[in-house]
Image (cartoon, one colour):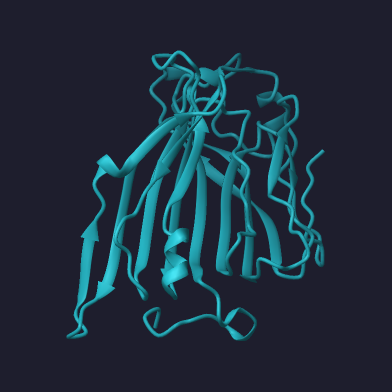
Length: 274
């Protein structure tokens, strides 16, 4: 279907189009996250308050980001939208344990030849240029050469971070039309954020209670196999570059404390946890 797709009514004539871009965020908890002062059979609503009195060791929490992007070139001018820039946290000290790790970066270009056969091409890492923008962040410039009209470019990469009280922002609106933009985040309930999403007719938001499992090796935690989570999904569809400005998704950590998982009131598209 993507081979024939050139946009919807309001987007016809664009130089290029983002077919989809997604970010999935999950937390990985080690068995040393909590310095427990009690033995608990499970982390549940019944004992969540007592659970919150224990110290949290942030160095044993890893945030995993999975980012995917597919762009289609629609005319010769669209080739300028083939490259992407990936910004991530990295201090001047490249060997610092606090730096985020960018891994599994893969770029593929799909094109149809004159016989209608799909040809796949992998982009080599020599096309990537790393640039430091300040003391804390670098940008990886990903260059995609020799794209053609009709080419579909697929990017994917992962970021691992031990900065559990920080989440990357997510940009819904781009300089070309976007068919689908989705941000999926599952956060342990002992980390409380202010979560703000754009209020816009093309953006839908939801949050529900979930659970996150983690490995337990300590004798006093044998039965504590999971903890509650807040699972957020913020999704935008058919977003135009000239739509009224759509703010980015953003978050800000509160002082870690315990509250029960929250639920999204019907009809609301603005998420905020207090």
